[in-house]
Length: 492
Image (tube, rainbow, N blue to C red):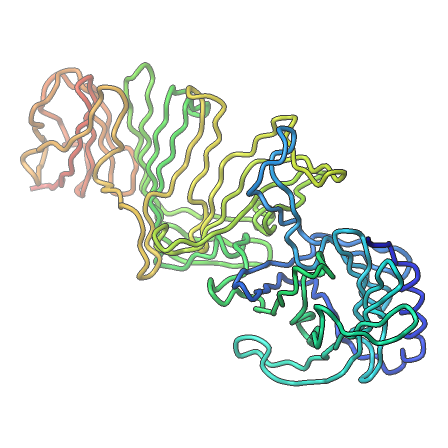
């Protein structure tokens, strides 16, 4: 029932514009520099962001991100039902400094002329039978457009005419209007991708550059790694096997305490107090490595560019990745988080996503201001890498269960970890260990995590006379498990 009316309407719009170009005002229908949020009458939030653009003569073609409805599986070949849910459609053409040409799902053209003068009209949309909708710049207003933001706007009123320019009641568009603000673009409109379907006359309103209900537009690289001094993170990392250490299994526990922050345009660097306990297993025999120091953590925003995308979006070539964000009051204490899923091929012919090449993207979850929460890269049950944030403290916000870093990770198989008594404490030259297993490996670290002593002991009496006065952490590893304690070395 629809025709492709692009060429005819283009000529009409350009002709109208040429008479008034001298008086044009700089109102843009689309803001390309930042994501914008819209909310409809059903309180659904929609994110709009220009993915990329191309220049063709005097025209600029902007392509929006793809947000695809994944609720229905259509065929075995098509992984998701792929009804486009972007209210602005898939792309828009800006013709020089004049018309904005939007396209609905049928490929029909919808014209918005934000540079027109008060009282001027143009053809907004043309039906197959020649009937058309006329738009008129009817009012110029100034006031609050969202939250406490004020701006001037041009109000565009719609009226419907027959092909012989006879006015007829506009059903269902009677007295409907579009608004274009000076600094934020479209602020009130209808679903241009479905326009002018009579079953979709729900208005969309500008919610701003931040969602009014969630506080942010989207979790990007800047949001995810925006830490502050005083934040604390406890992380558990499991690698099986671990090539770097040549071990069958490596279990690491990290505590990061943010000391200071240095932010630049393309990266952010943090000075961090780190406690790291590595438990390495070869043939189920554990060994312990303990680190306690201060390091710099640097996050380059370009390494996390995939977080700057919204919903389903083009990652590279014709591959799409599902990066959806959410907020749940019972998860991460209400902190918004973003999940990154597999990649898919997009088939334009049937608007379908498939994964015939079995492309796999690691499971990833990132939080607003808490960075990487979960990462799982697995090819089999015997070989994988997994990282989980088990606890964070962000100001007064806490989530998870903190590690007791005087203890070690629970080992695998029959190996167990427990505290043990060391006496005397403080000690001068010797310490004794309760329930000692002959032949155990004894490892002693200073408070900076540096190795101070390592030996295999045949008895529970350990010579500490060579140590400098101070506090020490002792780990005793044997076939019976891992035992740990703290003691103080003195000279008297």
